Image (cartoon, rainbow, N blue to C red; front, side):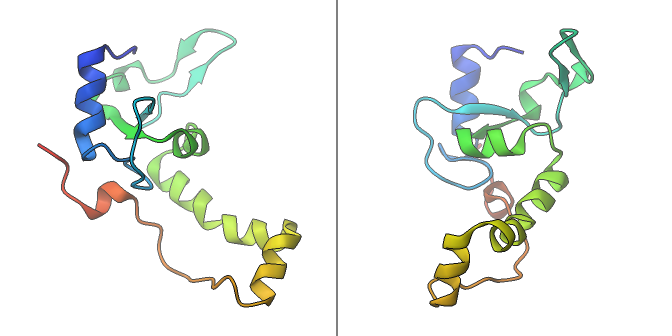
Length: 122
């Protein structure tokens, strides 16, 4: 579903001009993320869940959150983010070094998306 300019403006204001996931301020260029993924098959040019192509099923998203979310559900996206610290501990020498010097403090907090912490703009 391609959103027109009015729909994009409505979507951008859904959370006060902020990314639904991380809460960063959105610029003019932002992504329209499917909350419940449609899961496209690009090779066959098909959509697995065309009924999800509604404005209500979109969240405004910064590029990095939308790209990282990919076609995950919200819970799959949340679980994916939880694994970042494990990956950093396994594969990033700079991360482990900064942690050793006390520059990083790991927590066990739950991943909460910005839209879960506020009321959407009406």
